[in-house]
Each structure stands twice: as C-alpha cells, then as structure tokens.
Length: 213
Image 1: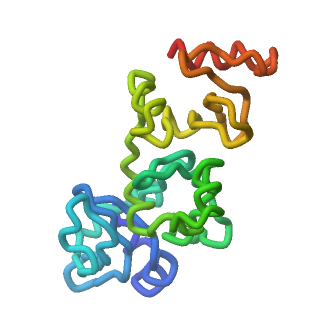
Image 2: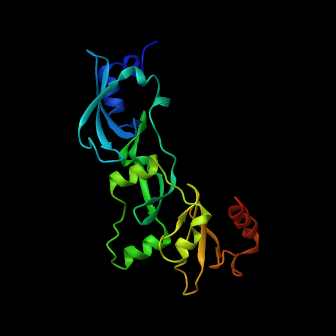
Image 3: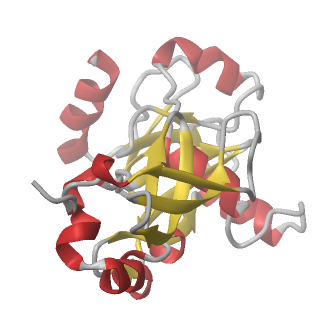
C-alpha cells in the first residue's frame, strides 16, 4: 500500500503538505519536502521539550504517513503558556489542504491576561510561537487541588480542561474567581470555593458539576 507521499506524488505532496505540523518522538515537526530516493520526508524541528534540535532539519520514514489522519492537529481550547492563560481557536487563514499549519492558531487572552496586556506588564498579543505550540500539543491541566495556590497568587489561574478555566476576576474589586466555559463567563466562586451569590441561577448546576468533577 503506497504511503501518502507516493499516492499524491512527490511534487504535489511537497506543495500540499509544506508547513503541515506533526509530532514524532515528542517533537513538533513541520513538513518541508518528500524525497523519492530514500522514501523520506524532510522536516523542520519547530519545538522539542528540551529545545534540542530546534531549527534543524530531520528526515522521517515516509511510510509513517499513510493518510491525512497521520498528521497531528491539536485540540483547540484553553492552555497555560508560561504564567498566562490563553484560549486557542482555529484560524481559517492558516489552514492547509492536508493538515494544520503553525499559523493556524488564533490566540485569545483570558480576561486577566488581557488586563495585564493593557497595564503594560510586557504581555504580547500572542504567546511565543514555540511555547504556544508546545502547550497546545502537550497541554498540562490543573486540578482543583491547586485552588489555594491560585488564591494565594502562586498561580494566575487554573486551566481545568481545554474548555474550562478559573481565574481571579477583573470585573470588580471583590475577592472572587470567575469561571469561564469556552470563552463565556458563567459565574464566580468565593475564596472558599463556594458559588458566589451573584452567579446566575441557570449556571449554578454547571458550576457544581465542574466542582464535583
């Protein structure tokens, strides 16, 4: 059975798949071209956990990619990049015909991250590209056991999943913590993790489920 490069043809594969990202051995690679002589795919090392090899070219066995399903598209959603929380969504202008490009991410700051941008704290409009991709492909989520670390200021917020974050409110001066689900603020919690009395009644059951999970 021919691999994807052989099925598409060398030139068409190189054109169609150039820049598409994939993960191999814990590293994020960007496809450059296909080599028929040794049936290999040349890739650029975009990111690795310890920074080793970043910026270098490597070759992988083309038989590892037999279909478009074998390239890696990360799940979009909330991630922590350094000390800041971001929500990643797909950027249609960065889509490739056969996969996911580095430019295929739109970064939306959390409300607290946005406030830090406005305050001149040195937070840019998007996280560093390499760090953002590492957080997307290898997300590290928090648990509610880290609640006290957030309340004490050791964490800027909690990323409970790709869909849910909790972070200190920026809406008022009260000591409370906003709960966001897929970019929507559904209510707030008090420092003792009890639902704030200003939280809409229709959202309280959702927050209870989050706290119980």
